[in-house]
Image 1: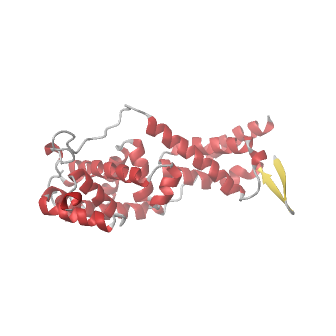
Image 2: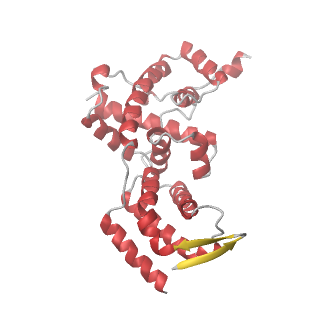
Image 3: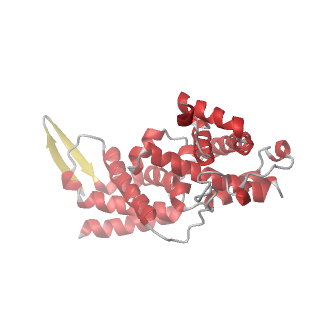
Length: 194
Length: 88
């Protein structure tokens, strides 16, 4: 299907029949580095193409086809993030590390960081370490895992993540802190002190 | 004045985490260092955090080189569905 748009002097053509060949891989890669789930990434890309087709008439030719499709995908990712963020009381294994009573904000005795055995030896990068780290990241509550991956693994700028997920910087740092505290504990129990 | 520089362990470790990305402000770093004077636990957390940051960075380097492509069967299925929708 080909859509023609008249923009000032030049004509803009939107050729939907080539979308999948031209953009599926790019969009899939874009989605998976953010959501870290192949099936979900496929669904998001499919929804994006469908939504793009439905709203092809609104394409004004101000950007390239790919940029326009990515902007739709970004909105789908925000929707997904909001969905996981609003799931109250879900089976999240968020641990509490700090007292919320009389000694508010201080370490809970049972969660105080322990000394690590053979720290330098255990810090040498290898496949086993990567695999343990991945399983610890996967054990994080979804929204923390997503933000942690974007900031730490994909090394996105803070501003970019806040914009993409529509959150404030202080919100982001709280999530990064919770993710890292929980990850530290997971690595302590399953890697450093085993 | 000093009271305003006093922070809890939760706040100290939040700043410590932010600092791992080089994004803590000068005031935050001052508060963190003052906190270390009275809190050895947060000091230990910070040292361990630096070790973890090195591990995360190593992991990030290996992950960033991976370019994910949509599996061919998924692409074929998507094409089929997309063509159906186009035909409607």
